[in-house]
Image 1 (cartoon, rainbow, N blue to C red):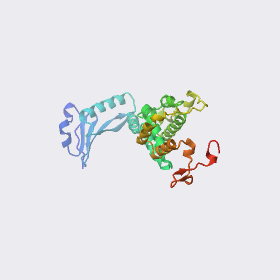
Image 2: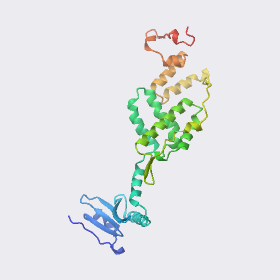
Image 3: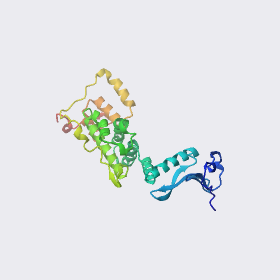
Image 4: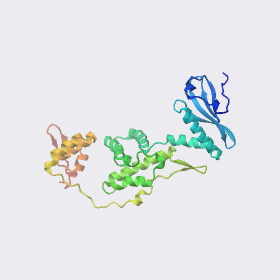
Length: 288
């Protein structure tokens, strides 16, 4: 099928917005290098023909369905102006498409977690892995695209919990580092510097030097008054914590046992018929 074209010329040759959806397959010129390409399938897309670095190029500006005539003219005028200044507008378009594909940290973390979750053998670990990020990291820089995250962001998220809950803080920092490494190998933290591709360093590296050293003095949790225990157990049962954690915690409360004794308990030392749990002497604090 021969291409149908309108000759490029004055404003009188310009396309009319109300008629664009009724045009037959072909190429229709709006003037100054802007064309509407109507394909036999019925799709309609904008094409700009202009000179870039001494060569004539065709640059797609998008579909008529998402970009009306007025917007296409505005975008074409901007690109023509940039091309006249010597800008490589084709490279700029490629960078724009690449930036549009870069995920936010929250999106990257969710993807990474979906892959890692298959390897988790412990339900609690799987739950806590993503929950620490939702609680301490996503509110700080979860919506940032991964190539914009820097050490200051990581410090802002980890700093407040570094001494308060040190074990959780260290685990969370490791998870953030792993996710950023995942983004780096996926090409999402690569920039173009004067024609050379450079992978940005992991913002987690060196963050520890800005954080205080952890105290070696063990801090015990404050005891809960006995009168408040029923209310606590009620709240415990309705939390979103993993079921195994809630049951273990309640078992610990009811038996007044030590945490390690509950965590390391074996079924062979529990007699369900007699409703008795015999803790081996070797596992008692006094070993008696």
